[in-house]
Image (tube, rainbow, N blue to C red; front, side):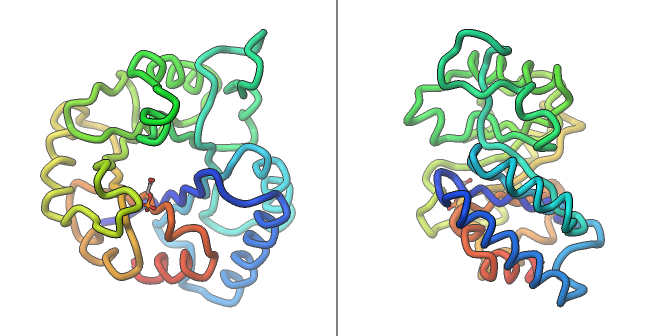
Length: 224
Ligand code: PGA
């Protein structure tokens, strides 16, 4: 059963484009009873500059079951760390934060040690970390309640893992983290979402490309 959809915009959209998106999303959901609601939680993981304006918009025009997430956080608390955004700055803007996405590991050389520090910073302020792992062997800090399994070859390739493969790895992750919610990410789309909807271990999905257009994203949510 899928209870969570995390839309990861990655490094896309200006503030203006983000506001246009959320307005379209809002008007489409207010015209439809099935878009959100029920047990499905929808989390939009936006780039930093769009978080405050979109949060302000959502405060005035709430969309049921929709909340915000960040895509990264500083491993340090406030201080002399030029260019970094601390967990305390995100507090109040987001409910969730992705940590250790494979693109962060690949292009920004994030290590498991960095990821552990980021998780600690988030937990200190009460933001829920969603730790992304490429396999079941990658360490996940204790106490993490959301783990996203994202095979590197499936990300952006248009070739998702099969639901059976994903469920196998999810089960292995679950055996090490018995209370964590396991999410799958990697080329999730409207066309393949149904296969992931009836699994017992995977409780959510993390689409990237398929979350960038509000109508495409809503169609994916409808398909769930
Ligand atoms: P994708 O990205 O859906 O575009 O493959 C998923 C992700 O990287 O989180």
